Length: 344
Image 1 (cartoon, one colour):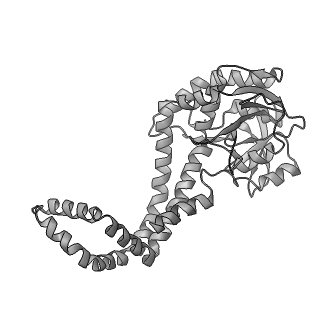
Image 2 (tube, rainbow, N blue to C red):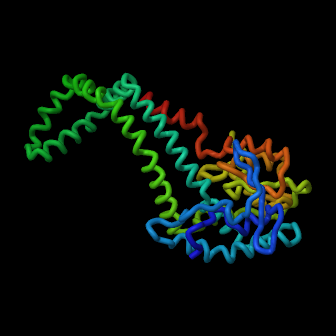
Image 3 (cartoon, rainbow, N blue to C red):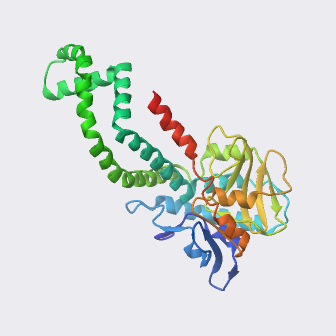
């Protein structure tokens, strides 16, 4: 067991971005959006109390701790050996593991859920629009109301034969029913705004831990990354950053870079920064040069922060772009989902 303070970005990876080291510690520069860069001991970076522990269950933390011995040795080899193509069989598993272990992933799901719920609650609070939506749904699918009536009859101990009579009355009484619902909507929406954030946060943590209990490196992802050719590539200017997603994917489509893949994404390459001067790149064909926009892409796909081996004005500028491409869904995609719901 690693203890109460659990790193969601492994220390062995952060060490490649050290600004300086002492006999007992390594330090790095931390860039957070809206804050001044600060130099910190990596023992205090990418860490959260009981991040992988729930109700005293340390299984996930123990699994990760055991796996890190192998992954740490692999990263050390990649970081210190000659920059060249590599075919180490453990690389796909390392990539799959880093993709699913981070706070970035958990928080991205949570923030996307928060945004969707917030938009939906705004919709519910719009009494006229929501009532019109409910009426459309009831008329389109009368079984919604029928099922509720059947359950209520059973609860009251009344014969189900009454259901047909109630169905005949449903259409005439629908306006009165909607008027009652309308009166309850403001309080209902407000109550949900208060209780849902904590519920969503707990659900995101529980779901993440359950998934990691099954596997800390999903086989479907491992198999996907086994089809790539890997190379260790040098960054001549030493400008690389490590984002809070650890890895980055370059994909086809309107969003060139993503921190987490969906099943239908077409992968151009996967990039794991190893240090400020080199990265591991997996692609269909061998890659010898890193994309020139990589530091900016890492910053934009970071959700909360990135780290670097030095403090510089260039990185301070990139700090202001943190989070711009980090979400699982864009703002436009979220609005489109809710907008489509309102039209149904």
